[in-house]
Image 1 (cartoon, one colour):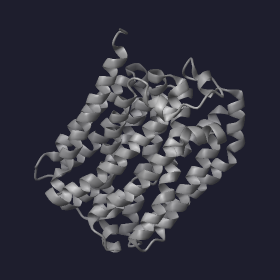
Image 2: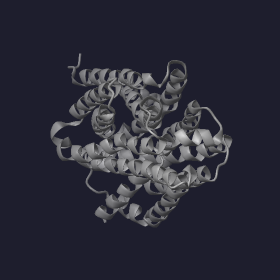
Image 3: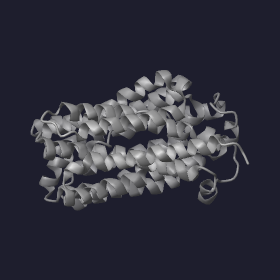
Image 4: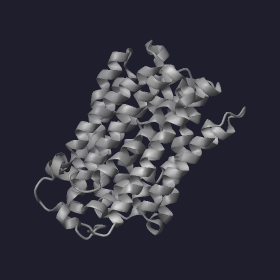
Length: 398
């Protein structure tokens, strides 16, 4: 029973990743077909992330009332409908309209599943599950590149991914009785005070969660990391086209190298995550991303360092997200973890909301060459905030 539920959670993580890279890989063609400037990609992602912030902050209430299984199924259904809406949109304003359910569908399920896994599974499982997010996010650029190359257009890619999401929704709805049985059985959880987290205690308010020492630091680190991730996903293909002269179909495929690095890195991290610990994974991940960005920035006549840099940046990014989430019950207590992870998701999507369009505005003034330097600043912020949190948590009590 527990193994079957784990397989379903794997499928849900694939569904979380599937839509995330479509806009970035398809935008070099989409903006021309829709007749809007290239910087307008940030508007769509801002709307999506705004909806995700709202549903993330509501995740604790929703999960307490309806359960993780139902929240997951309904959220994936919302995302599926939005992707099909994208696929049949012929104008920019329609994309903006469908971006609303797209965002609302992502936040609550992200927070609910991440807290469930953080409480019930070891660090290696968190990394492997998040590698399945990378599987979904890596598949979609190839779908986009294939449909563009075949002359079917970007809309066919959205329709195809929307169909996959519908199939996953059916699986999740069929699994609802299984979630109920597992909840009653209460499997062994990863943290000693996890029973308190599942007890029908008082709601952990936003004010109370934010008042916990160190929460602000981890929110800033999460903001920075997710800003790096989403800015790279959204703008890497456009950077390759504009600065490296690569054709759009090839750039859509090469843009997937970052996501392939994340996917492979999370799979590999699972084998040594329990040994190294979350803090080491976060620190090493940020440093590796910085190395990858240096390679991307090198002004060399060959594209090989740039492509290698995308892979290295992806490998470095791999353990950061799962390690931050998995460490939350340990750092702040299992009773507070659902509320704090919900706020972490909101901080993550705030970074996703603000920083890619900010880069779009900045690049329209400076040029796309600034892409790797912009990301280096965010990487430095994430590394510093996570190290400050480590010092706070390890400092002896006064």
